[in-house]
Image 1 (cartoon, rainbow, N blue to C red):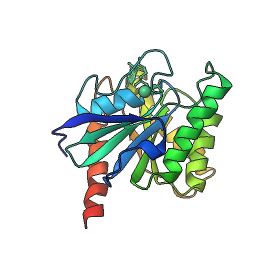
Image 2 (cartoon, rainbow, N blue to C red):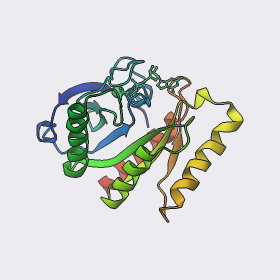
Image 3 (cartoon, protein in one colour):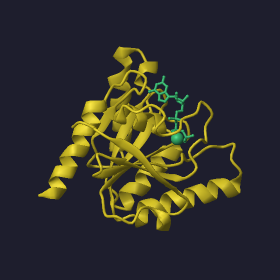
Image 4 (cartoon, protein in one colour):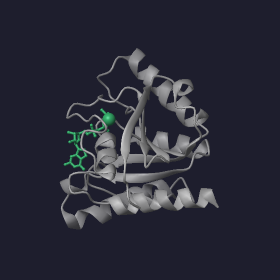
Length: 200
Ligand code: GTP
Ligand code: MG
């Protein structure tokens, strides 16, 4: 699929304030600094579309980007940033969970995992919560350029094996690098497949 046009639509502090039209949307979630905003820019081939930062905690609202005037990519704040105040963490968690549970237009959640790290409790808990809540999701491993090429696939497989301990059926996974533009076609084709299915 070609992305011909990608534009920022709106930043919303609550799910109730998100766009009112009924276009399908795909959201990106994961720990703070995992590379959500960078991935959106990479997919859209649009530097600066979503705001990125080397320091965690950049994205603080629900950000909608309209793609080809047809569907949305949604950039969410990260979870698990220890340096935030407890009140702020709670507020963001509430924003994320109500968006995910209440947003009817939400078609798929991409859960981003830094490929360099062993499975962390916070991600496992989040993934298990998605599964228990019957939210369709897929796993996206980020920053693959930071591992030696031979280590990338084994690291992803090891992570999926860990998930298999809890879940019989596993979602698809993608290996990406926003730096090297790896995984772009695969994710866009996946989204395109779902969009086409919904039109049938
Ligand atoms: P929050 O909005 O704070 O939750 O972070 P985020 O998940 O949106 O991360 P963001 O895209 O802002 O990226 C965080 C840092 O990681 C930035 O310094 C990016 O340049 C870097 N980064 C993101 N993706 C990649 C990647 O694929 N490879 C490398 N080497 N660095 C990356
Ligand atoms: Mg961000």
